[in-house]
Image (cartoon, rainbow, N blue to C red; front, side):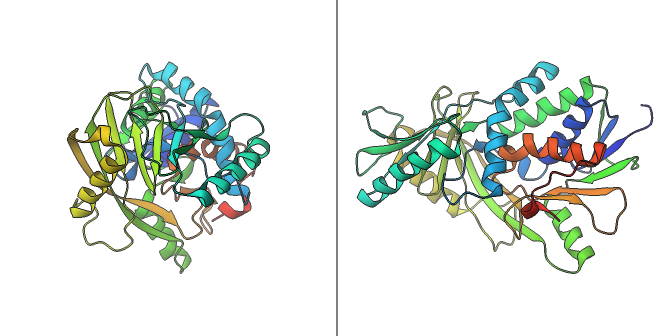
Length: 342
């Protein structure tokens, strides 16, 4: 490969997405991953691309909205370049409403969504219709939004790697030297390194556990029930996740907490009762102290940059985040939101 313009450290969703955005602009890119593609939380199974509630608007929610709205076209380009499906589908989401207060709140959010989502997506309160793929709702009412989407994290990572290689970029598993600018997208290890370098904590890992069931629902919306995501994938599986564990001894260990999660999902959606559990997964996700992604120059390291802190919303944030980082690293245009800065 000719001289490298950009080295990306880490082949999770942030690293691969930034590399792809740069490659599309003609940069010669090398991705260096020490373990495996998606070795951290990006190798999980849930893949819910869901918006924050449309109220108390802020720069994080606005950034996420832009990213979710551009996702369909962005992933289409990746799939066309790679010949591999990412599993992306904007199929919406259903949420049960527990009581009258929840119904009133949801209807108010429908009004604000009409303005904040700029008419490009909707948030509605709708009655249940007795379909098998409906969560149990005490009020007989659901929130239905058509902004939520899903993809399969592992399929998406494979598609990005193939697209990068088709564009002439390198994806190296192991060690390789840094050339050009360097973007550090190394997840929990990267947060620890940045914290050590700055002398203060900028974030930490949060463990999550999830399960994959064999159940055909690929054309149906995802569900969000009392903090639980139920996500149908394009390969005929359904993901259930996830726990959020701030204290843990083994980030890869699955335990009884996951059994409780599966039981909760089956109670909320009886059609899943008896579905075969084909995988149990646990991993540690990088959460910044601000709960927003950390983007920008690495203080005191000329030519080095940070893209980290995706936590639960990394896949949904990735398209816009990648473009913003490519603007910064390749062109010197800084449009990083203030609340995302390192």
